[in-house]
Length: 297
Image (cartoon, rainbow, N blue to C red; front, side, top):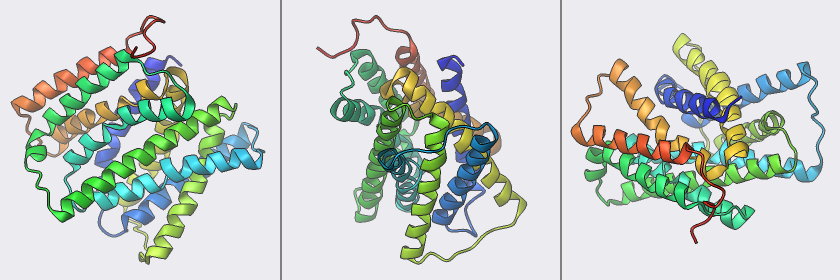
């Protein structure tokens, strides 16, 4: 599949999951919802691997890295984001999460020896300014109280964890582990860790059998996790963690478009300017570059 389609599917699906998550809130604690989501996703992937006879035997070292991928990409990052949203607005979290582009650039260079690409760095800067403009009202209303600083700190750490999960996935792909196979075990490990966290924290074990909860859980598990993470992590291996991470800048725009259709979101001048900047950065980051454009120096 062309990398442009992988990117498009990732952005469109993850943009829609923001709306789906709203149907998860209420009866079930978010930590349990994360555990359910990735347990179901892992089960779906396991059945798929067995039916298609994909190899599922790996060494202890590979399982260790798949567990790292699950820890940072399918567990702790989600838990921290849910904790952070109790203190700061979703718009501010979207701005913070967009910095994953820079984190992937840094972590890729330090942990995997990936060259820093000036073009991607420039595109990321344009995108970050754009997404900040989109959420400028919430950004300007930010006050440095203890609660909001805790929320911001948790969101930054959550984004950093997500970036480390990206690096673990890249390592697994470089070690010839398939994306589907590593996601299968990674999501299982992530669901197990999230369950342990829920039990340690003392979160009440509950499940909501309503159509809205079960339907959104199925969508988040199958479409938002199995398909979207499959597309994104495949993209990661194809075009690099720095360029692929720009999806994190794009999908809040899709979420706002859906919010306009279903929740009555009203666009402002700065938001429209921000969208133009985000799209411009998107074109810059996905445009094929010359081989010489591989470093900042």
